[in-house]
Image 1 (cartoon, rainbow, N blue to C red):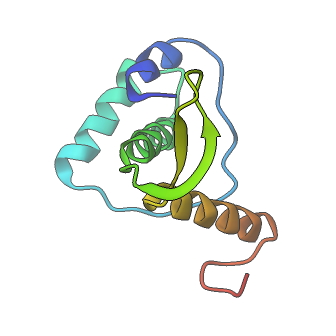
Image 2: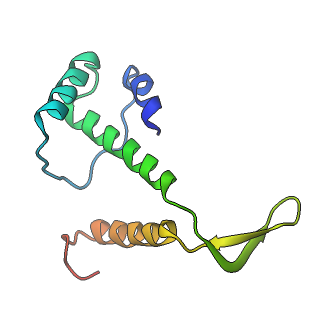
Length: 115
């Protein structure tokens, strides 16, 4: 879900995924005040749900902004027959790390434990 879609979703009753990993964060005063304002504006969501959904949307936006770096290997061809080259930038490495950490978290291993 994109940041721009959150307010619409928050006005509905549907709830997102239930969290499986808990984090403790300290927010600066201004961000804490913004979270509290959102809690009042969207009473169908609790504080944790709002923070979770905001973070998920922000992460999706960050991922979409990772730069594409063209590699040497052709991985496909487009409709016009032009080559599509592999991405050797940050995205493939990031996605690999996400898969590794997802498996570690599913296995119940703490951060820093061997995968």
